[in-house]
Length: 171
Image 1 (cartoon, rainbow, N blue to C red):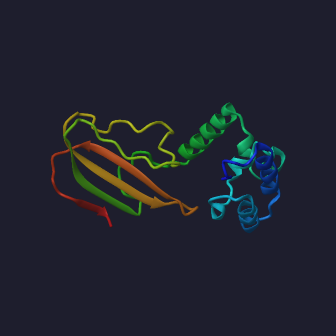
Image 2 (image 1 turned 45 degrees about the vertical axis):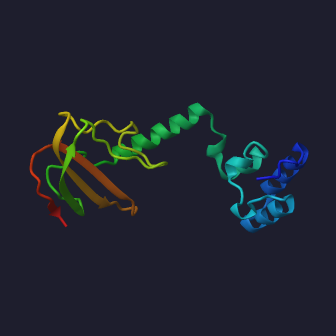
Image 3 (image 1 turned 90 degrees about the horizontal axis):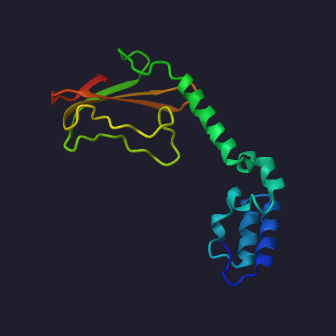
C-alpha cells in the first residue's frame, strides 16, 4: 500500500488520514499523495481497524470481535440458516424451481462438491464424501430455488444408481 522506504511514523499518519476519508475518491487522493503503487484499489476497513479502531469499529463492529465472538457469530448465522431450511431431503419437487438429475461416476470412491471462498456450506461443516458406496456409478440430483430475499438455494443429493439417463424433473 505504501512505498517500502516510508517511515513507520509516516505510514501511521497516512493511515489516520485514511481513517477520516469520507469516500473512496478521498482515499485514492491520500494514497496517491503517499506514493502508493495502487491508489485506485482504495483501502479495506480491515487494513485500518488497528490504526483507528474507534472510527472503523463504529461502521464495522464485526472487525473488533475476538476470535471467540467471531466463531459464536458464525455459529449463530449457520444455525439461523439451517433453521430456515424447510425440507432438507425433499421427496417431491414442490417448492423447487428447477430439479435436474444426471449420472456421475466415482472412479476413486470420492465425490465432493467444490466450495467457493466465503460461501457457507450446509450445516457449516466441511463437505463430506458423497460416494457412500465407494467407487462406482451414482445419480446426482440438484434442486434449485430462490427464497423471498432473492438468494439462490441449492440442494445436492447423491445416491447409488446405474442409469445413464439425464432427467429434467422440473425444468
